[in-house]
Length: 107
Image (cartoon, rainbow, N blue to C red; front, side):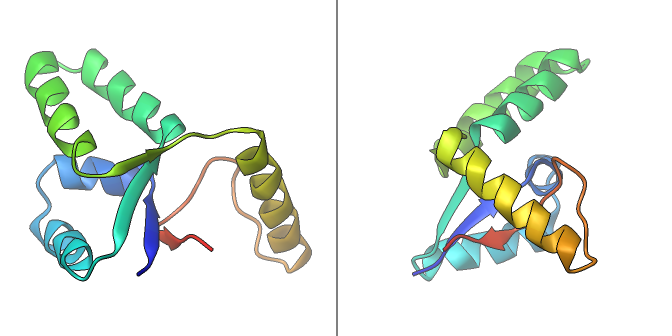
């Protein structure tokens, strides 16, 4: 069983109804894989919903989605790991911006 952390871009696409991504994530869940988001991503998605013209509709969609994924807290251990990974990628010549991610398998 694998665990996957969804970033804000992927979560936004799921909430917007992008079918291919939704199908891939559903297939992963059916295989027994765990899908999750960080509290940071959840905050960004709520910000988008509260800023939108369809606030109530978007808030309902977030609540439905949050019920089907795990929400991982971004604590000091996560911050330390983030710093370590980002520094290592920069040393390898593959820097990433501070808060960018993808669907990535957790170790």
